[in-house]
Each structure stands twice: as C-alpha cells, then as structure tokens.
Image (cartoon, rainbow, N blue to C red; front, side):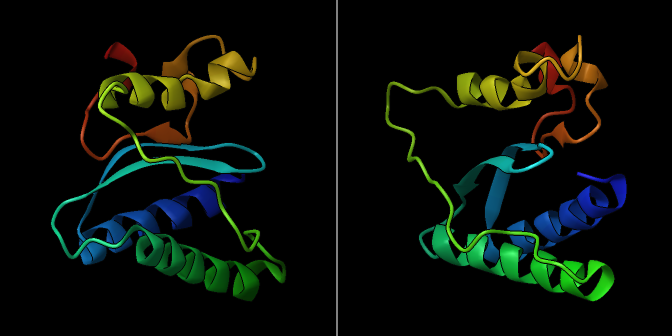
Length: 123
C-alpha cells in the first residue's frame, strides 16, 4: 500500500476504534490486504460494525481520491480462544512483512504497529 493510503487508513482506524470502543492491539498493512487484532472494550462493541464503518470510511475516501475500489466485500475473522495469547498474535501480525521477505527487521516496516504498545517489535 502507498504511504498516503496507509496514512488515511490509520487515521480512520484510530477514529473508528475510538468511536466503536475498540483497542487496536496490532495492525499491518500489506500491499494487498491488512491484518488487524482488535478487542472490544465493552458490551456494546460490535466487531462487524467496527469493520463495516472502517471499510466504509476508507473506501469512500479512496474512491474520491483514486477512482477505484480499496476493499473486497468480505473479510476473514478469527476469534481468539483462551489458548491463543494476545501478545503472540500481535507478534505474528507485526512479523508478517519479515516472514514475507519484505524487510530484514520488523522495526523497519513502516505500515505496521499498535495503538496499545509503543514498540511491538520488542514484545
């Protein structure tokens, strides 16, 4: 993804996370998809609404500025169970560019991070 697109998407992600009451433990914008690890903060937090609002805001911006479509109509979700630690999944998401051979150090990939941790590469 282009820096401008990721910047706009990150602004929308932060806004929608606040609006819909979600923590963003990890994000990683890859060239053709995005990984997110989010957690609802209260009983009114609705993940489907969160994803819908995020895709709507970013998709609308992208159509206006780039005359194209940003997202597919569906997405894959996975609910973490008790044996899947949030930290381990955060590391997995952040290290995606490293595993794909895009960078040699996870700290050098500019399109991944966390709204909850300052330095996710040191987790």
